[in-house]
Length: 268
Ligand SMILES: C[S@@+](CC[C@H](N)C(=O)[O-])C[C@H]1O[C@@H](n2cnc3c(N)ncnc32)[C@H](O)[C@@H]1O
Image (cartoon, rainbow, N blue to C red; front, side, top):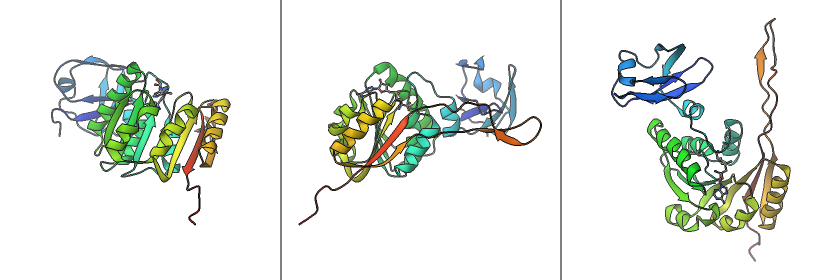
């Protein structure tokens, strides 16, 4: 089936991907060049291999994997090494109500949207309009690709100023993820929005950010449940045989701290 408007991903064998819509009219796809997708892809369908310029590509149905590989970037994004861990550890899934910010280019928000399903709610906040513009474009395209997409609200402004929007949208939150330079300034403004037992995570590139966030979360009466960093060590197949750790260095992204809202006083 090659219907007009169909979303497609063209995948290089190493996983790099280009997402496009089967529409008439010339488009410029970064990395592939200018062409008319409708004309060029005529007769090709999902599962076929196609050559565009020097690139040999497999046509696949786009998923979150291709959408993340092909997303537009402006602000530094949270990669899947960390977003996967954060989402699983915090118990975020179908139907969860989640607040995240800064939204930036929407890397984390895209992974959140892919697990929340249509019964979930995502609220994103971003201070800088030029970052918001990129993130919103990534999310809008994802909403057309995924089979289900959560209710999504955007706050153009400070993450600490989302109270009215959260109350109007979903009353309270199951999870909050903070990815801004100074989480400790925002934490106490938004913790009241978290349900009892709900979790909050701060994404902290440096140890000083981690320490300040840790102290603030404890001052707010939350129970720290996990803190550390995810270390990814890749392996490869050696030319003389055998599988061994590859030469890719183990890089640092950020420290993560996750805390849970607990009841402070026992009932008499
Ligand atoms: C590292 S980026 C976020 C990346 C994003 N989480 C992702 O995965 O793609 C940090 C973003 O936070 C925004 N920011 C900084 N302080 C903020 C605040 N108080 N409220 C909302 N956004 C803020 C910045 O403009 C920037 O776009």
